[in-house]
Length: 333
Image (tube, rainbow, N blue to C red; front, top):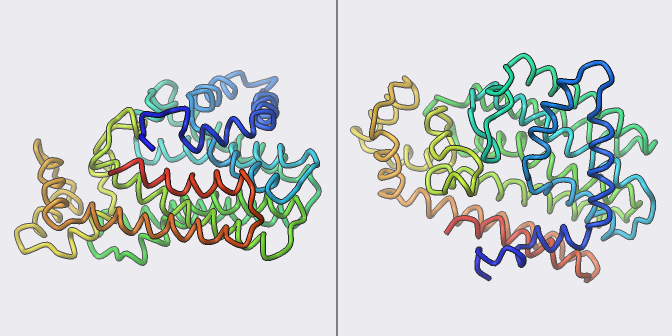
């Protein structure tokens, strides 16, 4: 399947399959991001939420619930919860990373200011907790509350791991599990739990979300060095400029000779970046096959995600989730 066949992309097929549910999610999001007293809240929120993101995480919640036979109303609340948590983290991330572009548009902190982004992110976190309480399911509340804490923990760990060439692949995976995979797995697990699925199916969907999230982040890290701005929705090379130790860099550093290591120390640890350094970094990644090996690892995680679904009954939704795991690694070739 070619990447230019937009209508055939798995997330588009999933969106079409869940169109009615997604419209209810979007309506609920618009209702809950309103504020009677602080108009800046819906302004900032709408700027990001209406920017054309794929809504992948809420779709995963809806798909998991439907896959497990759920017929009630509360998967809508959980999907909106997941999107609010995700949006809140993006608002905070852009402040922390001093980013200027998100989803191909100027970031909220650039258009307004850091204070607005942080406070509106806080508001959305609070709104997400209001939403996750409404189904009245303590186990679902536990899953999503734990995910919120894990995401914050992952972001703090990344702060301490960044700019340190001693960062290992194990620490990198811990960061990725926190800042990205935690919400993917909470999205799928909560959908299964609200449907009162058997434990084997709950575990399968949680494991699917975890592996999918890891593959997704690894590919994002690859695209930062080899994608297009249109594909990744941010500026190519942002991770390099922000001196993040992502998996391709960790692997290139591990194979570096003395001259190369001195380069990485200068640009990552010391932050002394000059014109042409990004191109040098990309050349070093290519020299040590760091991009190819990272893609191979992302494919392994994608395959783990697919294997996790084997215990679930055959259905078009299961097939779409399997295809989605393929697609997240097809984004980079």
